Length: 104
Image (cartoon, rainbow, N blue to C red; front, side, top):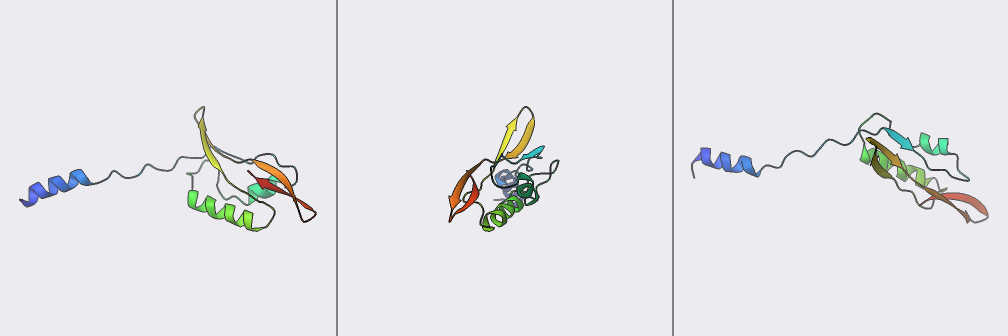
């Protein structure tokens, strides 16, 4: 196969670059009965108006979870009405006589 033909064939095989991460318009921490939402928000480095940094967000959630006050912690990225937001929900539980909050 001539080099020019090989290059043409090879250029058709290249994958297109992945799309850029979405820009987060809003970060919303769900209501919780026992843990201060502002404390949880301070533990999340994702800024509104910035591209979603899912690796950093995952690390932030691991740190928040490792503090021992949460049983579960997750997030979702929602798109609606032209707005993308990160959202989570919480439920409370009792552990060892201490009331804590878990994200469900």
